[in-house]
Structures are given as structure tokens and as C-alpha cells.
Image 1: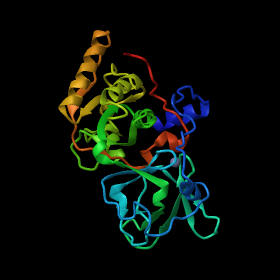
Image 2: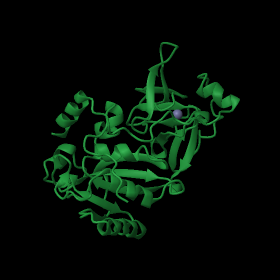
Image 3: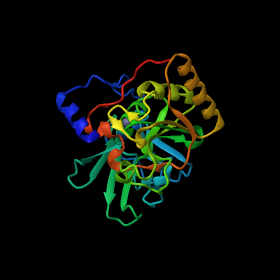
Image 4: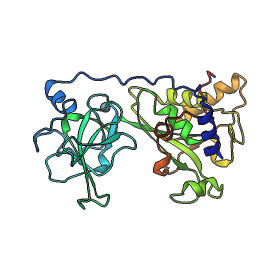
Length: 304
Ligand SMILES: [Zn+2]
């Protein structure tokens, strides 16, 4: 149902829910060495980059535009002399045929900065892929500095759309929480038989954005007074919930619900402890970015 609606709205060209903050990425000033690799597509000498043997847990970001590119979980030791990853953050990396006619170049999807090359079929990891990335093309954000928040407010495509555009958000993912079945599929969740909700996971840097700012955004991009779903999407999987990870998030969520009730909104949003988050299928991740569309049932309405 929502796919059809989405298509229709796409055809009608209703793009009024324009994303407020989207603009050309702000680029960091590069040193001559960084420019030689990132802009002029050079290659750093093997075994010289600062991330070749780097083992910290966190996220590798684009040196030029700060976009998150790779998770440390996907880094492996390929012994090739450059940092190697067997997967990228969904949508973060663009593949283009290299000028040499043989290899596949990888660039940052946001700013186009050169990262390195990607190879497949080498059998080095089960994913059979090696992103061979210049250290100098990346920065690193340790995960100890990030926190997570989980919001359910209708179709996760629309909720993720707003959070991934927010300052201080490191990464987002959509998936399922709160049901009975382990690792449910979209089809199972849509059937209503598993009890899961569509949820957006938001990884953020609390030094740049607070949980309260994210929660306020959440209450303004969906209708927290709709009791049977969200917009045209009716069903248990579309209900409004803040899944808190600790008592401080719980306190904030309940405070905001209280403020909205005082303002006369009949808020039905629940505040519940976060169960396990099951990441959804790849095609749901960054959905509107991939489809170059905008949400059909989420838009920002000032409520605070
Ligand atoms: Zn970039």
C-alpha cells in the first residue's frame, strides 16, 4: 500500500516536504598530501597510512566532508598495506569505472572524494569484497563518543529521512523492534503477526546533538496523537514509540510527552525500554535517498 502511495506521489511531483537542511556538503580544507589523493585520485604508499593497523571501534568518515563511510566491524586485515573493509555503510560509497579501464574506483557518495578501489572474488572474507581505501581519505570517530536512540513513528523510510539529515547524527538504520520473532523480515512484520514496529536507529554524537533535540524532532515529524498507525499506514507496526536505552532517555521522553499533553495534544506515544534492534533489509535503508524522493506521510510540524 505504501509503495503504491509513494509511487503516486512521486508521479504527481509533490515534493513540498523538502528536506530543510540539505545543501552542498561543507568541505574540510585539505593539505596538499590529502588533495593529491582525494582530489587528484593519487594513492598513498602501502603500509604508511595511519589506519592500516588501526583497531579501535567506531566509524571511519570522509576526510573531506565528514560523511560516515565504514564501520570498524567491517574492517579486516588483508595484508595489502591499506585499510580494508568488506562492507560499506549503506549508500555511503559510490563505485565508478576507473580511468585505467580495469579496476572499480570508489568515491565518497556525498562529496565525490577519491577513496580507493573495490575488489571482489578474492575470497578473503565471507562477503568476498575488499574496499581498499587510502587512510588519508578518512577520519575516524570512536564509538565511545556516540550514543544510540530508537524511534518508531510510522513508515521507517520517512522517519529515517529526517534523522539522517540532522546535525550530529553519525548514522541511521531502519529495522524492527518489539516483536516476538528473531530477525523478522519486512513481509512478516507487515503481516502483523510478529508484533514488531518499524523503527529507526539513530547513532549520534552527544557532543553535537542531544537526545532531547532528537526526541523533539521525532515528535514534530510524525503525528504523536494518531492511535492506529501513521498517516495512511494503519497497523500495529506503525505505532508511535520511543524505545529508550537508559533512564535518562526515559526521563526526557516522558518529559516531552508531558509538555505536549499540557499543550493540549492527546499524545498516544509510548515510552518503552529498548529490546533488540533487528536491522531491516538493505533496500529499506536510506530509502528516499536511493529513490530521490521525499516522505509521503512525514513532514515537520512545530509542536514545542
Ligand atoms: Zn565525502
